[in-house]
Length: 301
Ligand code: ARG
Image 1 (cartoon, rainbow, N blue to C red):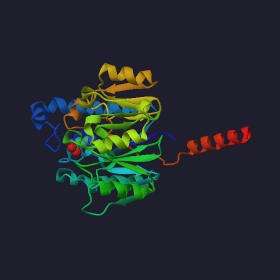
Image 2 (cartoon, helix red, strand yellow):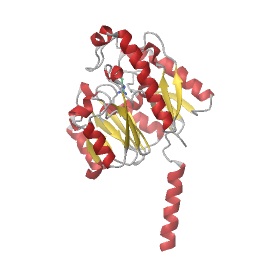
Image 3 (cartoon, rainbow, N blue to C red):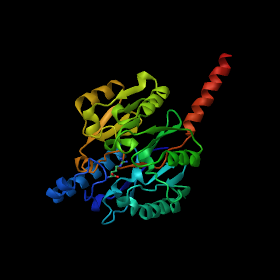
Image 4 (tube, rainbow, N blue to C red):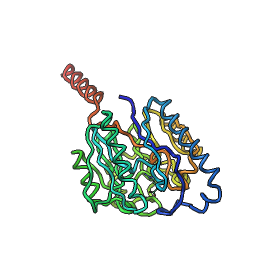
């Protein structure tokens, strides 16, 4: 099955408040017209790059006064055709909840999603930004601290009946897990160690072999390159430092860079601007591969 990705029309995107240290409303208002135009170009370029890689894009509509709607990664966690809708910690973003609920209802009516669930009120969970599916390991990685709570991450994992490793985020600068942690399709994990507490680093290192850990530099993290979308051997990200591209291509990945600078002014980039709707905890071809392996093992026995 090819990737199916939700994005939001950036028509009303702006940086008009400050709920994370990257957000620069001053920089935005000094060139609102230019940045608005550049944001539209960046969003369209991201969609085009993903479409070139075979993804289908569904669009959620923009709404005036809700600029962060352009980050649908925070709208929900989606796995096996089920969407569990987010509960935003930040009051500035709570108005997005009914709009994303309506968008998911439309996806359900269209048959793109089978089921939509809501978390109880008073729970804080900011969607796939803090619950990242690792297809290789067949588990979620959940981030907690600045936005989502640890308990909400556990609820998410229970809702899908999958294993999860909770990772505590150490700083407001890396306020969602997707700003500092990216499992790649081949099983490597690109991550930024200073964003994590000691127990979180231990948990990562206990589950990912040293050879599979790729450390992002300060510059990679500040350019939001860890906030990347991997599809097969392709990785789509914001403009990268040359060394990161080299390190990823040594491992057989092609990197597509998109100028997402207007979105980095809000603390987001490629991963935040997208939400995968098609992740399966047991993909059909993985099952086939297992069967195949069993057959070979049987044949050898
Ligand atoms: N301004 C947004 C916020 O602070 C950016 C969200 C970026 N999304 C993400 N998944 N990291 O909530």
